Image (cartoon, rainbow, N blue to C red; front, side, top):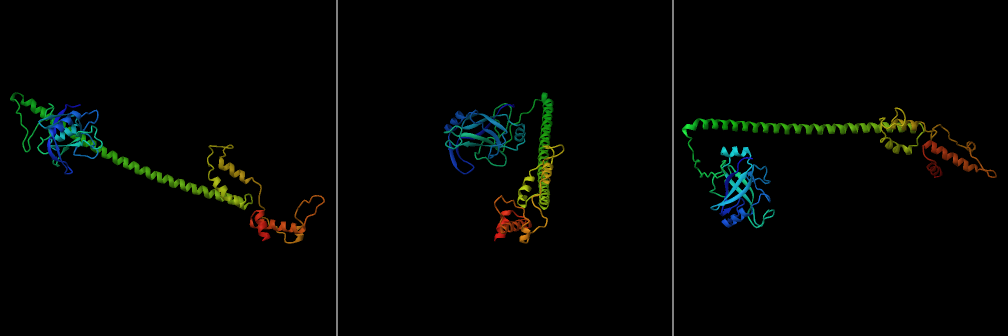
Amino acid sequence: MNAPHLIAIFKSGRHADMSGTTLVITDADLERTVAAYDPAIWKAPLVIGHPRHDAPAWGWVAGLSLEDGTLMARLTDLDPTVLQLVAEGRYRNVSVSFYTPDGPGNPYPGVYYPRHVGLLGAQPPAVKGLPQVAFQETGTPLAVGEGLAPPRTWPDPATSQPLMESSMQKTQEELELQQRLEQMARQEQELAAREARFAEQADQLTLREEAIQQAEEEQKNQRAAAFVDALIADGRILPRFREGLVAFMMFLSDSGIIEFAENQGQRTFFESFLKELPRQVNYAEHAPNSRADAKGVRFRVPDGYSADPAGLEQHARILDYANTHNTDYLTAALAVSA
C-alpha cells in the first residue's frame, strides 16, 4: 500500500453541474459532508473522468477534511499507473460527483455525499480555481496555480550526483513499468483473440456434430422403414403396424452395451424376433368365385345345426377381399356388404 495523498476536490460557492443545474453549496454543507463521510458505509473511488459505473477504481478516498472552504480528499491505494499518468501531466484537473441530499441511493441522506472523485484530462472541471492535481509522498497538497510551474528545489552541490543517479533510476523504473503495461495489454489482446477463435471453433464443431447426428437419424429411420416394409411384404406384419414399429425401432440401440444375448444388441434382438413371427397374411392367390368353392370353406358346425350356404359364400368373399386388399376382416365385410 503506498502512502496517502491529499488533493483538493471541491470548494464552497455557487456552481453549475455538468447538466447545467446551478447549486449553492456552503461551508456548512461541506462540514456536514466531512462529518458524514464513512468509508465503511461507502468508500468513494478515484476514477478517470465520470464513468457511468465508476469502474475501474484507481484509488480510494480514505477521508475528507475542510480547509478554508476547500474540500480535501485523502487518497489511498493509488494504482502505480495513475501515479505515472498524473506525474506526466496527463490528468491535471479534478472533479467530484456527489449524491444529492434527497437523491436515491445516497448512503447518508441529508448531506452531499461523495459518489466518486474523477481525474480530468482535456475536459474542463465544473469547479474552477482548484489547484492542479499532483501527488507527493508527504501527504500534503502540492498546489500549483494555473499556468505556473511547481516550485523547484535545487539540489545541494554535495549531493547532486546521488540525486542524478536516483533520478535516472526512477526514469528506468518508469520505463520498465510502461513496458510491462504494454506487454500486459498485448497479452490481453492475444488472449481475447484466442478465446474468440476457440468460441468460433466450438460453434463450428457443434454445428458439425448436429449435422452428423441428423444424418445418422435419417439413415436409421430409412433402415427401420425398409426392414418393416420387407416384413409387411413377406406377410409377417400387418400394414397398420408399420408407423408404430418404425417409430419404436428408432429408440433401439445399435450397440451391444445392453445385451439380450452374446454379441446381440437391442436392435439385433428385435429384428430377429420380428423375423421369426408367423405369417399374418397369405398373399397366395385364392379367390372362391362360386358356391361350389364356398363349400370348401372349413367351418365346424355344432351337432344338430347346419350352415347357411349363402353365409358361407359371404364369408368366403370377405376373406377374399381382405386378402386381396390387405385389410382386416371387419373392413372387408363392410366393403363386400356395401
